Length: 290
Image (tube, rainbow, N blue to C red; front, top):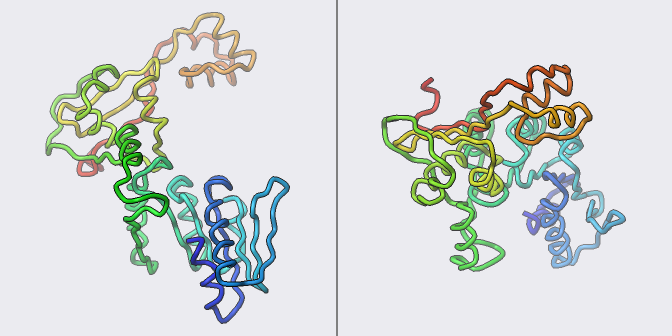
């Protein structure tokens, strides 16, 4: 994407303003870096605007410019084209707004990868097919390393970056399974985690770690591996825990009691015990069935 933008400016018959945005500057920095490499390769004269810490904020070629902006500023900026890097990580509400606000949008995201899963994000775009001219380009060959690189394979195997969600055509019984049981059965773990990855566009390796390490949780799965939910057990707090909440300190793992005690001063709520649904999902073929 970065290499192509200066060429787009060169081929255009009028000045272009291209906005690049991403969850953080560093997640979109490569586009700015490679845009500059492309300008140099084309022998273009340009003005480089950087921040005090060396971030490339703008590349200006005559009256045209390539500018990075944070999402909250980029969404309403006036320009000809907006590039959204790691688009799945920004969420469908942001993308929905940008698609309505801008005439030309390029969304860059990973279907499998550490940034998050883009699978549900791709299905989200389906609803725009009738109203927008959508072109989908898929990059199969990596640009940073050789295809089939053994280190990449190790990372995919370790963090389950390429899991899929599939299952039987019936639910069976819903049973509880401990993290220890789940992580000692890799075939089941891949199926269960695949459901979570497919259902959530902001899934990351942190979620795999929480599935294995998170305290106060219960995991329920369908015996046929078509559904999963993570439940957090909350409440039954000690007097010391209540006191720390009243003093504004964090109390991880007790979200609902924490809020009610902190903002409503409902101290009696601390003795109640309950379950909070942290994540719940089913395979795509079972969705919208109630």
